[in-house]
Length: 249
Image (cartoon, rainbow, N blue to C red):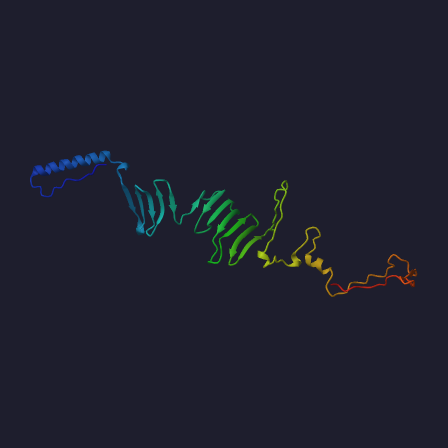
């Protein structure tokens, strides 16, 4: 667009000069009104309450809340948003959502069936991953030097073979460098097939320093009363093995 300058009437004393100035002004305004459109605008600045503004310029679009830019998009289509809630649907499902004021990220197939990443309070805790179903949920997060994986209202199963048509692999519990342990109460460590706890099984096993029960007498494969010859030519009479017990190591 060519530069537009209104005639300056300062210093004009004659009527002819004023008429010429007014005529030129009318001609310029007529051309301007007939030809101006959005392509002639270099910048559009809309001022809002509390210092907020919307600016449309050659560089793109900028929205400012009065203290900072909250939304910008440049001519390459690159968008930057600060403090924005982004959602694929307002109320419907399925829905994905990013919301810095509530759940950081969320994917919902229904109101009670979703996966979210939530910010926990304080500086010692990580964000918390929650996988929720209609009647139970699973959580995963770090607090201090401890990492937690747990379930509420549901069993927690670890499996290396979710697809029975594919051969599974081992489940390895490996404490660091042998300096730490896998900790579990023996009275809560239960065998799947016998339904007995490891604690109950250990109670029935040998204990160090305790005498075993009596073994009862036995003949040892030789009838009692049998006379046996010794290496020096003498004889002994076999009486069998008497009942006895042993001290457990």
